[in-house]
Length: 328
Image 1: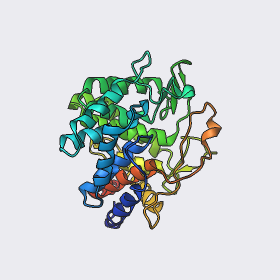
Image 2 (image 1 turned 90 degrees about the vertical axis):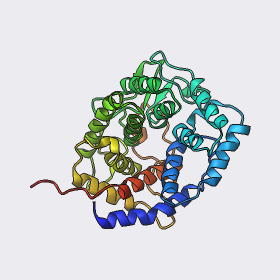
Image 3 (image 1 turned 135 degrees about the horizontal axis):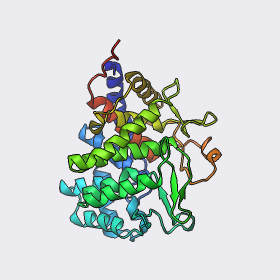
């Protein structure tokens, strides 16, 4: 990793964080967890003030009506903020209850957004980012590991991981959506950090396999297609951010990452951030489909998940030593 890349990441950290504050946090949705995680990283670096986000989370805990969407809350971040005394114990307790009250599949996997009729039997790969680590950080490490392992099994593919599993159909959709691989990859590494060392080994091993799957499929511009191995698929820029954050994650130290692949991914991340800190080229909401073609040409739109993934990548770039050149 070059000094120039590290300096550029430091320069972009505050603009990306400030831009992320444009979204309102305190009534939760997909992608809010990584946005808040990224903002916390930026705050630790002195790049942004999260007083407003913390106040919004406290207001949610005290006043918002209870819904199943509470389980989209950034549970790990809320647990950390409560431990630091910045959020009340009632905020932590409400978050724990949100996860505990979810219905589960026969495999024991909590179902997110079960109130939406067409989604009430779906397990989403996105959930691997925030759900297991939130459960672990809220004090239920054994349950967190069980949830993660069961989710991996139902979403398993020969390469990558499927976007959804339908518990009623008892099958997954077979689509290796690359942002979904990123969600799962970074989520498993965060989970491994929250578990006793030996308990995290299977998740570190799986993350290493996905890093290998991705680095074999990187485009010459440092990006990845929306669907792994689909030459007709367009580009999904958030995948590069997930890859960088995961490849430089402390829990991925044993993974074999090609320095050239990482350098291209870093350049791709830095290159998709505009002057005001907006991360471009990120697909908007990607809804479940059984047709792989539905994933190929998504609408691109600024989003909390695009911003959050970039923030986590920028943090990782700044925190890591230069990548050594490959041996001759």
